[in-house]
Image 1 (tube, helix red, strand yellow):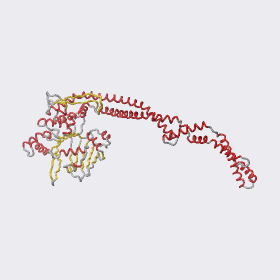
Image 2 (cartoon, rainbow, N blue to C red):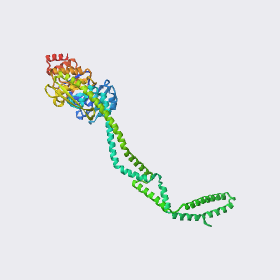
Image 3 (tube, helix red, strand yellow):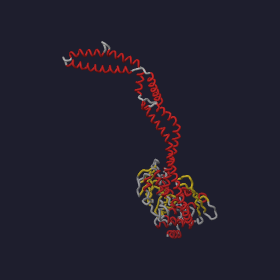
Image 4 (cartoon, rainbow, N blue to C red):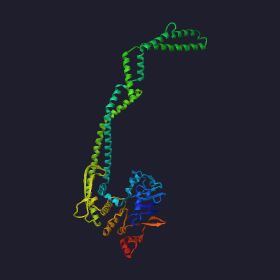
Amino acid sequence: MITSLAIKNYALIEDIRVDFKEGLTIITGETGAGKSILLGALALVLGKRADIGSVKDSSKKCVIEGHFSVKNYALQNIFEENELDYDPQTIIRREILPGGKSRAFVNDTPVSLSQLQALAPYLVDVHSQHETLEIVSENFQIEVIDAMAENSSLLKKYQLLLADYKSITENLANLKLQKDEALKELDYNTFLYNELQQANLKKLDQQELEESYETLNNAEAIQEALAHVNKLFDEEPIGILQTAKESRVVLGRIRDFSKAFEENWQRLNSVIIEMEDISAEIAASAEKIEADPEKLFQVNEKLQTLYKLQQKHAVASVSELIEIQNSLAEKVNITLGLDEQIETLENEQSKLRGAAMQTATELHFKRVEAIPVLKKKLEETLFPLGLPNAQFQFELLPSEIFKSNGTDTLQLLFTANKGLAFGPLKKVASGGEMSRIMLAIKAVLAEYKKLPTIVFDEIDTGVSGEVANKMADILQQMSKSLQLLSITHLPQIAAKGDNHIKVYKEDKNDLTNTYLKVLNEEDRIVEIAQMLGGKNVSAAAIANAKELLN
């Protein structure tokens, strides 16, 4: 319930604060006094978009703050789902800064407007003449039936199944689209993959191939060069190796005379050993080198294939080609495996659809059972409200189309008079009848679910006399289980309130300001007497007002 509302620098309000209590609170005031301003301020707290034009003094900040006691409404999950800090005494503050920027806070934590709007329906339910029109909405009508049928847990189960079904359906559609796109590229990717696979890349060493090619392609020149080197090494008597050996013999004669000569001999000996090894390797290489046109052709063919693939894929190494080959293999395998994935998802989709449809069917039958009870209660409630012949027909039909609240379609038919045919509620009910029907619905719902604070803005439009008395009785009865605020022009309803707030205007220093006043018992007598007979209160009006209050 709302416990207080503070308004500063908004419309005709300078700075006021009003406390609200449990039960039925009546709000009265002359037309234009500012009752709509009060509702406008409350709407801002509940997430309505701010308008700098509604600020009284645009050079100052506008602040509207509502305090709510929510401990009895089990809203912890709602706060958590919307990433809000829960507090049994929740404070919502809206600020409109001089530049027009708006800010919102829940328990002093900045929040977005969408977060505030998600929380609002669990705090206050405002019904003006505009909101009354929601009664013709199919979703609202089904919501009323579900409350009667106690379908909340079943409806939640259905909505979870529907969410999973929609998610699977979306994934399936994306997978099929992916398959269509992949199939277009499958042949080309398969060709590229096979081309790379046939090249047997993992067994290719590009550097080794290039060396082999150069060796085979220049076999004669290499043989000549190696033979020439061998000749330089070993040719008698001036070969490099022969000359070195002779030098070693000469140094050997004097090696014992000096440490330096010994070191020279050792170094020359090491050179000779290394040269002998080199000479042997060159000789061996020379024996291996031979012209092989067939092998040269094979090596060249492998190299040309490799070069073409590198050019085709814009890379410079075998390892990069192998990476491309692996990537292509993955693409081909994914494409070929999509059918299996699609089949798996289609099976899951089918199961979820069946489960959702089964739950929707359960919802349908529970609604069918609840409709006669709802019909009877509405007609009984409307009887004393001046609609003794009101009758409803609920045409509830299942379909194959999933909606947020099931698969049912509903048409609510109504007639207010005997002998007249039923027609769609939105076409045959007048504005006054709509208001009374909405009141009847809320009165019935109050018996079956924990409703938030309800604000009725002139729900009594178009009624008077005994009907007004009956409407007042209904409001009073409803207020025993919930906090109810009613803006009214009818003294019969005003007299039934547990609390009474008057909205009025005063002109001071060429400025008009709206004020709120909580009326005591004497104030209420005068206020209701004025509602009965105008500003000039007569003794009869006073007596009548006292009688109504009693």
